Image (cartoon, rainbow, N blue to C red; front, side, top):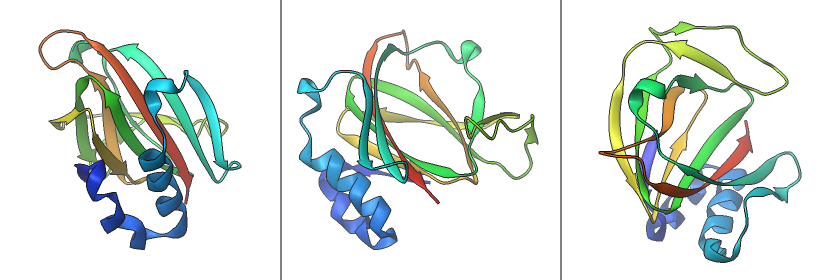
Length: 148
């Protein structure tokens, strides 16, 4: 897991061409002008999901992870708590290959992801996105899916 401000994104280009494409897309796009939906960056290999939602109480959250893609999650507006824990040691539920998604059972830590910050979550990183800090608030987030 990596967490940093978008202004520092160039420091992570060396992680791979696809991650560089994802980070450059985040740096070059004015998300105040982008509506929710899917935006292809490099076909199915790298694409962005622009989302708008209200953060929710942790009691409504769940741990998730992926096998085929890593996430580069960027908060364009608002702030949320993001849960994190390594997948190892958690109890995994069945994997949905079509959605590249599975839930997990266990406990983890939470950190604040504010507007202007991104996080890179690899397949070994269980995460619980979209959690309210104190009370629910509107969030605009971009999740760039990068095929591994």
